[in-house]
Length: 221
Image (cartoon, rainbow, N blue to C red; front, side):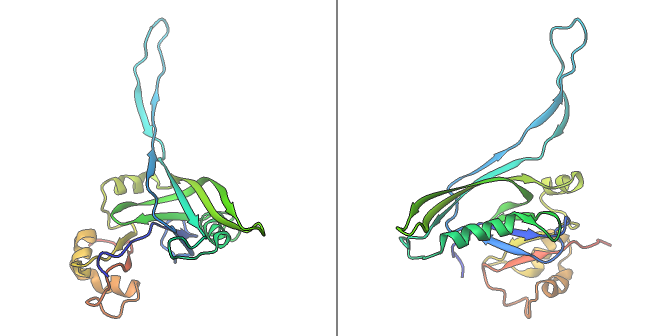
């Protein structure tokens, strides 16, 4: 319903273009209190012989890193009882190595109005903080860093925030309509039947707020 808590989620894909089905999902137990986005500009600092300074010629923007901490509490102190180790394993299964594709999964991170990030896991560490007498963990902190996985074409399109040739994720909010979202993304409200079928919707007029919708790439005439 409107105003409901929306959790940060990590979606796993096996295809580099992110157009296949979602393989696995990991939802944050509690939303992070902060996200750290790090990016680096690369310059050519070649210096001429006999000179005392160099002119920094811009080369490229390196793929950015997003760092986030996932806190998991299995004590039930907030009324939600979870198995800490199962949650950790769900994170590892979603973000880690996939033997079927011989590499880690391709990931999408989505949370509210935050720009959807296409990325892969760069590094992660898991700290267990509290244990039962049996040794079963009751609390854990996953510190993860994800690195951008967009190619140059996609990176430019994402920088423009809208591109009909990319898959978009949207969380349907009260007051939204599927035709209006199609107009926003594709510049064409009349493609809503295709989007409805793609998401398995039986009625585009009865979409519940909080529903996650995927808008697939579409060629524009």
